[in-house]
Amino acid sequence: MKVALFGATGLLGWSVGQAVLRRRYELIPYSGNGSDDLKGIGRVKPLSLSDDERLTRTLLDEWPDAIINCSAISSPDSVNESPCESHALNVVATTRLAEIAAHLGARFLHVSSDMVFDGTQSPYRSTDTPNPLSEYGRQKLEAEKRVLATTDENLVVLRVTLLNGNSPSGMRSPHERILNGVANGTPPTLFDDEIRQPSSAENVAEAMVELMERSNLNGLFHWAGSEEVSRYELGLRILDRFGFSCERIKRGSMEEAPAEIRNRPAHLAFELNPLVGKLKTRPADLDEQLRDLVVPAHLYEWYRENADDPTRYVARF
Picture 1 (cartoon, rainbow, N blue to C red):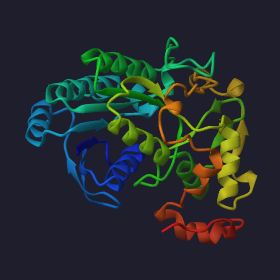
Picture 2 (picture 1 turned 180 degrees about the horizontal axis):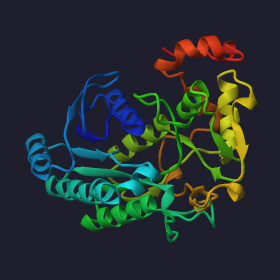
Picture 3 (picture 1 turned 45 degrees about the vertical axis):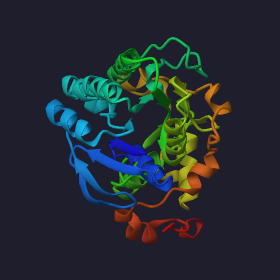
């Protein structure tokens, strides 16, 4: 099977690429800027999703059996600052990928977000009515609708939750942001009343590759980890994983936060049926997710000198 992967240098895309290769499929990874030698994947080809002519020509030349889209502008601040630019990628380009996949007869998998919900009625089923509170959530919902409208077969839209994991940049996931903040003297404030159901990029990647293989499973699904936790509690468990004391982060409340933060969904969790009963991949619990986390390479020397108890962490090579 030949698999075209978009967003290959991101947190989830990197894990998906490695999962595809573990299955011994042919991987063609793409990202906006590309990469000469991405660990675990190799060369990532530069290809802008905004270049419709080149995108179409490239995929027609390659004629992949599956197209996986992990590409997105996912930072709410970036979306708010450049809504037109983010809409072009998050919605327009995503729709175009789905249309090309349908033309090729390729299986199409697109990643969406729990941010399509308002957080008032968790746990959410895939059949529940979305009500996004942010521009990012609205764009992800619009993309879902457009993708699902392209065809009623051979595609999957998978909504995922907050992702733990290791990113190529060492700057993207919760533990990377916490460690970078502590190292830079700007420890994050995490809220004890903001509840999420985190998963790991590696676990989501395994579920996505299995969905790619399962042509009988089509439509809109939810995937997450097996535990709900506040962002503050997640922060504490990350600190414990790496041998730092709880004083390294700040505890806060959404009620006391600025208006733009108070408007975030307070409680996002998923009902994982029916998908969880159909896949061999199982949702990862939080301990599993934390065991796989590593100190970003650019922070390793700082970590060895500054961790309260560095013996808590054994580097994974």
